[in-house]
Length: 423
Image (cartoon, rainbow, N blue to C red; front, side):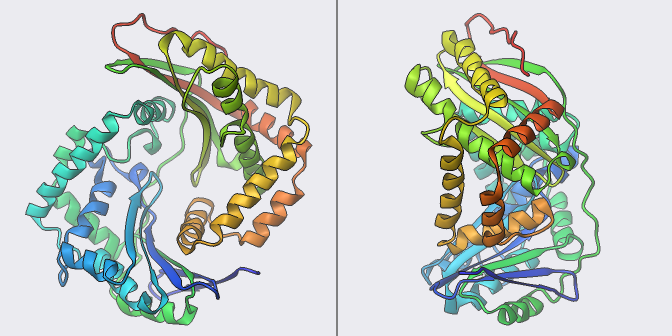
């Protein structure tokens, strides 16, 4: 069934997008603020994430509990998240309660109380959240990679900020951020499900009537560093590795993004992938091993994450590099290309049944790529890709990329020397 997407730009600059699903019983609707951790000044690290938390703590007309009851009592759910690129707030609810969902989210963003006592309480909650990540070496090594590879760019610092940075954030900074959301930062509003476009446009015009979009986001320029290798010690049992690369978005058009996705799935996105089969199934060197790709508005990164015993780290690293080199040199194995295409198409089709997944996909495409592609369009591109096109594209991207590696390993052991060549 053809995807029906409509767009309206309100007089105040807010963009409203709808994705109509005629057979859906529910609707997912959300507001995206195109500001994330990469847009923060040095004394603001963690501010976007903190603000995401604090708007749930009450508005001028609702307490924190009343916000929760408003959506959950109708069987819905209310979610929020912060990335390096944006902050999103969305709800999924039975279709007839769309006006309520829009009212609650608008109330949270346009009329948050920003109470000082609640801020101090939530500060402690966020510090506990940071401590929970500190117990996950896989999270830490990813942050270390970003810190060294993207040094000098906003992508380098963590989304939550450190404990010290969160403790330093002030109530005045939070009030300033609130004013920027209300009066400056442009907003994107998206909905998927059984939603009437004109109804949503009218609701948004009413609930966001005071919203202005007069400001410009702080500039953040992509920077990356080549051949940076860092090993850190920590009180853990395994060595955790993340090696990866990045390149400017200008090097990759829509077909390039598709090529990278096909490469990523073949290399490390699932149990049938090369890295999983070689390092875990064949050699038994790791429980967790996978590859991942992130697309920002101005750059893209790709990398490999794995955890293993310290004495096996170099072997696992070399295997991951060799599998990547084999792909760059020889391309897909027999039948692998068609299986990979089917994997990506199948995942897209499965997500098409979920209003929540569709609305997040729509919002993130607009924010990261500057445009939205229907599933029919994406399907056409995927099916038209050839093996040679993927291999040539990935080789070109790797040839222009910058590489780095980070390791978190147990304290008290001889320090690992990352004396490996990349590509």
